[in-house]
Length: 308
Image (cartoon, rainbow, N blue to C red; front, top):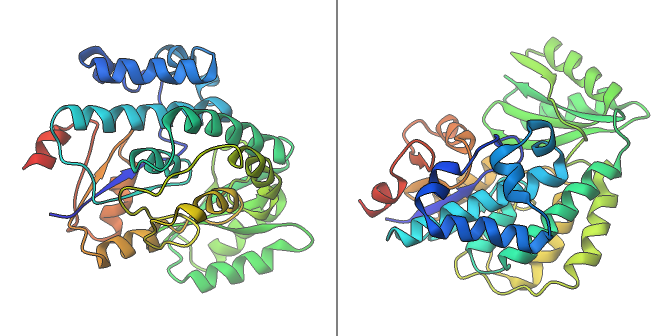
């Protein structure tokens, strides 16, 4: 049975995530220690003890979620679960996917995600930009029209296509608020700001991509052992040469999550395992198709499910 591993992005974090797995597994403990060594700082203490305000600082959240996802993937392998046939990650989760696919070392990914978090936060001054979720608009073309009408002299753009009827927009605060008002008039069931510190995945974040470019030039990349589905083009890829450029443009381009899920389904994927903190991606999968065979690591014997 063809299986995809899905890796969550920012928003899935919680203080204490991974503790239960760490208490029972030396593999998980070593992964947490590797992350600390890579940063020269006690990231594991922030993950396990918080406080929440520190964990939710973007430069901590991103390597923390990466660490938990990779730890869970290693634990599944140690427990005899079969590996994935394809991998994909939502935004930050793409780094976890590349580590598990063997294209990027874990230590390099930890350092890159720390830099990515800092660069994304610093690209736009705090309070200048934001994001909003828009639910109930079905046509992506209508979303484009809403953004064009709302922008004025500012920026508001599609930032994510998560599942049918669930989009995210990002840009300047005023433009995002106008987009929410227009979306409501045009029939959206919900249109409201998200609790985020920056307008991720829109053109305002292009400077963050350029900071990543310099760092990625120093990082060795390998051909993935299994195909991965990048956020920026939603295509199955094993092209080592394109990885860096996709990661650079990813921070300022929308996340094509629904499109990527449909590509995996078309390729013959029959089950989806969410490997990381929370169950966000399983929820999105069920909104794409309620009959999808999917399971999350947390709250389930995922290794047993994969072996079954």
